[in-house]
Length: 208
Image (cartoon, rainbow, N blue to C red; front, side):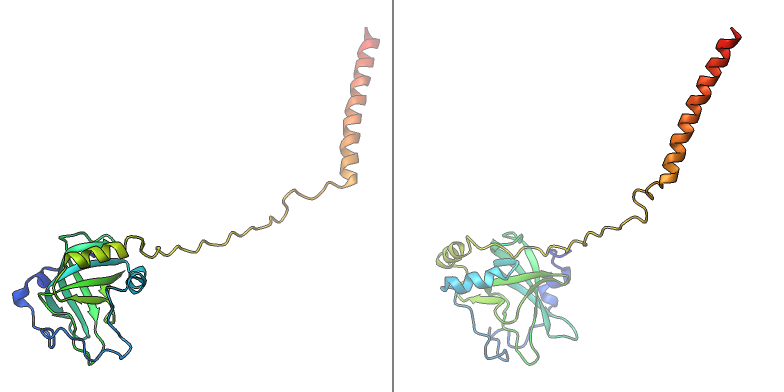
């Protein structure tokens, strides 16, 4: 399930320490990958508008995904601002770090997460998907985020394109129009029946 945290990720004692995690940096990221200023309402709203979930969470554990640059993080949600991830919930967030970049999320710290829901679970972008809160979720930051994100709604779910309606013309919707000969034949038959009826009545009258 998407929201369930794997037991292996919860077992912090079995996790490997990630290089550079203690430093809390993300060296090796593209030069244009600038950090998000949480005091900039426009920037925060723009980042949130492109996300399915926005929440603050403490990173409890981390485990690299074998054979890739992805790292799975076990987090405990401290505050939820957007989406269906609830406060107190434990979740697994995956970040795909670029080749050569040191993972910039450290265990034991709190971050603002801007995530997307994918077939692989909850995913945060390596560039801007997380913002470190050095002092944790302070009342000032909590109030600012609450105010900034009050009017932000998650992106709408994609609407399936309806199949175009196609109309098929029947080969003979009303049938061929009756030919004049057929109409006359029908009329003549009715007249003939009426005439025979009169003859029959006339003969019966004579016999009487």
